Image (cartoon, rainbow over all chains, first blue to last red):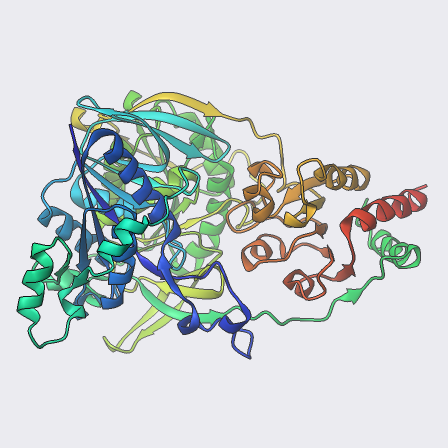
Length: 289
Length: 341
């Protein structure tokens, strides 16, 4: 049968693995020092897409909206088996909140044609909102399935998925085309394959190439299937006002770094004496009443 | 000229035939927010037969409950709820709409926000009304909703505002806002809405539903003994259980422990688990990642047990014990039992 699947991926700073180097002297995170990775749950979404392609055939296209270096994230997806990559980058996308981002993504996905499935990771580890998936589904007019852990069945009648809920799960059926957001419990993403890495490490987007001979280079890459498409506001026929800061109803008013230094605690020795003192103090405070 | 929206409304999620606790917590918060705005507190209640639930919403402080009833709304699927609720919100024009950050809320709220083209902030840990100056537009806003939440993996606290779009929308996890006491007999206004939807929106069918009943009630616990990845194994969690039992408390866990399969997610404390405020919180083998601390830092007294003297948990602890929980916990149990006589 074969399904056209679009997977949205985001390049994010690795906020989950903070080492000493990532911390500044004042106890705050040095964001610029964090390595850039593909958002973890986007890899789960990609894995789900690749598994569907393995079983049913079809094509997997990855799309990422970000600065030019997001092409690295797209290459990571090509190394794992994605067939095609699209980089949405344009200075006019800067300062986008989830509404403006989902708008741009919806325009890009429309330009790709009408995929049978759009997959997103549930949530990104920098914004932590989990809003892009549902907002993108709304803009594309697609039914949405969030918290997907498993695709139980897919066919001409539609798709059946298992959704992980707090303290349980449900199994739902709906029509295609549809949008799924995928959680980390869905699968173990496959690593890059050596063969695909060797081939696709040469993949480039036009904006990554030097100006001299760019057109020829682009043509060459396209011919070898190694061109990462580079689309901006105009290519996706987006309304400029609905993109970037002007298309973003939310504003960040304030950011406070969470500091990892605070008041002293009382040191309790793990001896009978120490623990007795602790228990007595807690009892005096009527903790156990 | 259209009047400035002032009302603060809550999406009343229905769980097991009752209004979900998180929604009631948000009604109490809505009352705090409505006061400086001079608006009314309202609720949006959708379902098959849900009108009787309006009484509880009035009891907790809603002045108005907007009700939409239809068999198609008996079980939640996105499209019918999004359609009906968006219609209700457009008609009512509130200043603010709050949702519990439950799986349902996090599925529905962004879809609504997208359709209404408004801003939404998820998982807020605090909400306040305050002024805002937009330097670019050179405009002053006297009373915006400050949507405060951690971001960047919990390493920053951001305050988000939606200056121009209405309603301002936010989702909040259960236990973050405090529940208040209901006043039964309090009355309010019921506004009825047509709950019927176009058949094309009924395209998703729930085939199976598995809900594990809530066996753990961390929110109401006076004492919580929590284990982290340092506990090491599922079997070793018995130590945590023993201490919890002796102290008359509940068993909690860090996300690391849950992810490692040491204990069920129902016990998870933290930003993506439950927010707790017990009188005593004993953190055993928990490093103290920001997201965990966000869920327990308001505990009355915090005791931390960890072999690593530099573990971040010691920074929120009132009492710190550097030691191996496998020795400290049995010793603590003995000491307590001797004193409890």
